[in-house]
Image (cartoon, rainbow, N blue to C red; front, side, top):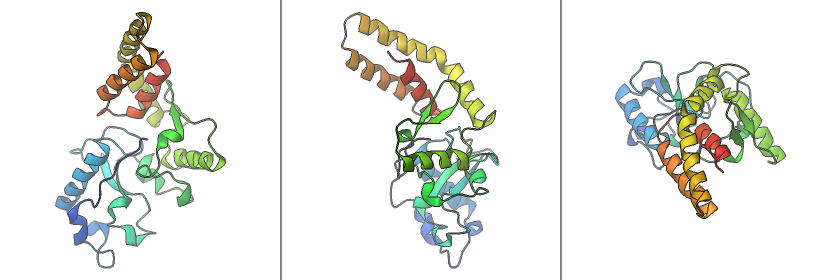
Length: 222
């Protein structure tokens, strides 16, 4: 999960619909494409929750997710701040969330709260709750991982993250080697770290599982 900057007011097409007279099924495919265009501007072509790459042209690989369930909050059915782009996985993220029981106030909304204040991703694909956070934040972190099923015991998105990190490890080590060589040559440590970090972050900016890659890189950086 990563923090998302949502631009307002959002897609004009949403104004065509009124929850008193329409349901989400009334939204045309043309208008959904326009909504997706805005979602991609906000989050890239990845799931807002697990950060898996989404194929926008593949049937069933994506859906427009209502953070607060439209079956409970009809008034938010066409509210832009309530919409995210989710992958089409049935065992995690948006579809999985809608089958769980939880307190809405305990779920992280990633355009309001930075998930990196709550989680650390590690080399084996795990995502763990950050040490030292408050009791309230600890609960929010645990509920979010459970409700979106972002840290299953085996397989699932954990395995996907691990596979991506393993494939990227040589690239990570390449950047780390450059950093070590610059530091050993007498360059300022913090300046080197900042420069190499920015280069790697830019390299992965449009990639899936960016946050996991980022955290593993930071763990390797001298």
